[in-house]
Length: 72
Image 1: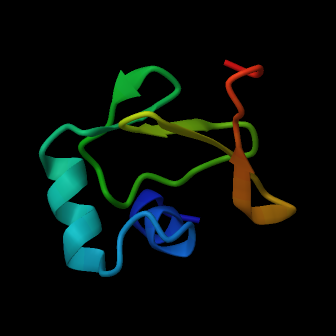
Image 2: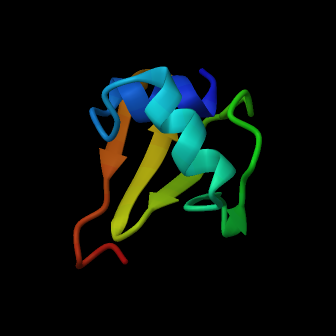
């Protein structure tokens, strides 16, 4: 799944344009690095961060897994 699709799937954005804007603004990171490519393909175990929301992408569960405070 692509990064912009994942943000939409998770409900963090409502449109692809909104996802593109957040990504282009440098507000999204994947595995600790700011990501500017909205089409970046996520792989199992990738950590996606937007603000204080942290999600782990799982191929078997495209909705990812939100990390609780205990996990961080």
